[in-house]
Image (cartoon, rainbow, N blue to C red; front, side, top):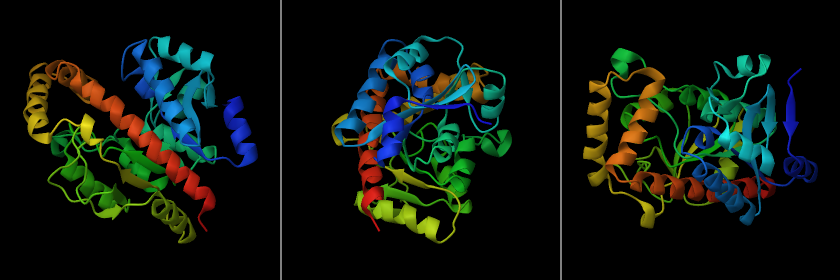
Length: 303
């Protein structure tokens, strides 16, 4: 039996049939320092509530899978050191051993589906790392999107990745990639890229209907909704490209590999942009939360 606990807010939402949006917890434990992490977590949850839905931040705490965190739990998680970063491979082991772990995109999708939550807002998904033809470094997020029926709202794949190869893998796995309101696939910190999105939708109701249609057709997996960062917050790709290249060269020179690559690159980019990359990250996460709430609300009303 799975040790699972629902927050009072999520319990009430499930009972009333209210719209719920899942949120990951690695952005809290691994994305930024305390107290900024808790401040941003509260802002994102507030954005979802203001849009008329209920936030459900997901995490494993002392061996219990929590679907929604109350204020004290959120504060505690934000200050806990040595929190595991959970994906499909280690989520069950963390629960079984009474551990504490923050959920990545893949783990959050698993928990959301278990809880009957259909929409999840995050910053950016993982994907195919540059040099993956040698390292085979491909995020479990992509395979999760192919098998777990949750609509994920993100600002595209993190721009430090090989985005073209990431789109190829998603296509091979049969994952719908839907850009919201534009033809170009967004590039995380930047609104556009040179890559065209496979699909485009301009209305949350259409996205909700597509989610339901996949279920009706018996298709496994979720949808990736690529939501561009607000124009006022973006860092143009022409500015970001050389910064990302410098950070990647620094990582290679430092011998950084495996799970250490992404946090190293994000920290280095933060330094090279003098904090502007983090400001953009916060803006895009909040923007994604607002869109996810609209989609969740439409899921309740579309036929």
